[in-house]
Image 1 (cartoon, rainbow, N blue to C red):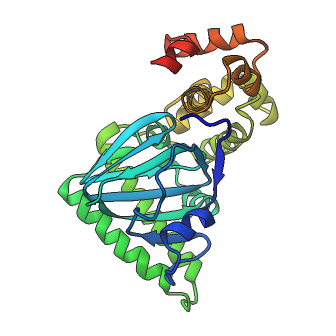
Image 2 (tube, one colour):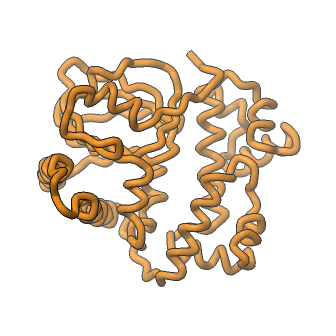
Image 3 (cartoon, one colour):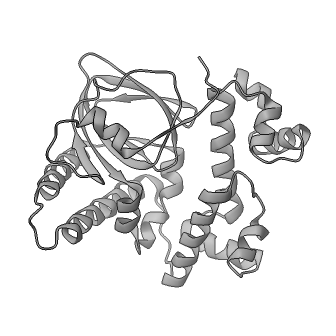
Length: 294
């Protein structure tokens, strides 16, 4: 069943369901091990946090950015800020463990980590990874370590130690993604900083601005130079990043709401339904109606 609205889901909303009586939690990070308290629903949610969840047993069905995903034993699910999700529907024997952290803590932990951004596009496209036995043991160790760090509130450098722990985890994520993607680029600190600024602008404005020039003007760069910097920092062009954000939103609106195609065109600031259809067809090879009915 489709819904007219996409509901925002905050980290406090999720904590109240997943870890309501857990002392070992904070407003910005907590761990959990049971998904059965989450009500299965067809409602579409936009998350404003990051989630890492390893399935140890059973199966779960979830829709992430309009794509049906089945999570099985050994899988690691990575959901990033601003993704859309529906579900999950979990089997009776489902077991696992996860970590939820706020957007602010995630950004703070990721700051200056150039290599992580090389794989961010991959996380958008493929949010579920099957870990090797060694990878599963690695996540189990991280889960125990982060649990310990969250609870160590009297540490003189509590936040710094927690952030350092998360940074090591993110570097390990880069390692596992590197084995799959096999991409390595050298990125200057200036290039990385400009890419971060670009990505921040995109996240705030992609519904209304799809021109690389619009973003380059605000960064006081030429469109060509911005594209070169973004390509160097992430392995994808500025236009590809823009299109990725726009298409994720459009596909979710088509699959998860009963908005008319005209309404979606207006929501995404296209000049007409025709121009919206041409944009979508050029990017996907399908008309919006074909995608919705497919």
